[in-house]
Image (cartoon, rainbow, N blue to C red; front, side, top):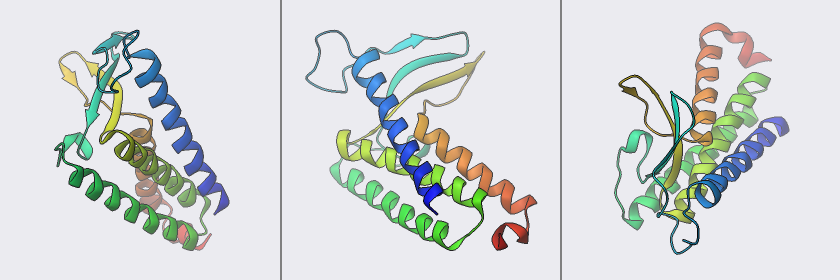
Length: 166
């Protein structure tokens, strides 16, 4: 279980580091320190990637988004409850792959909770697009959650009972 928790810690720390770099160093105009919500709009990295500043006050794709403190408390509380349940699952499941996947999800969830409690919103900044097709902005925490969830799905489809017994 220690490896899963270490993965969670590393993901959370890397997520916070990347958000700090983008919010405080890359997108903040020179000399503007009053609010983290005042930033440049976008930096083009290549034909398919931009660094943008998007503050997500809701959950995935901005669902349940509003500016109220109640929203921050409810979404943070829900994330923390789910995180506790995932850590219990991690403790009960001896399969290394499952523990690593859960570590990715837990670390990502905690990284986004830190943002909610700190800013009242989650800092999203990676913006991929292909032609006229755009994916909503996201961050390292969102990526870790997605990869962890995909690993869990693949494990449940292809590992069968072996994964739960290892």
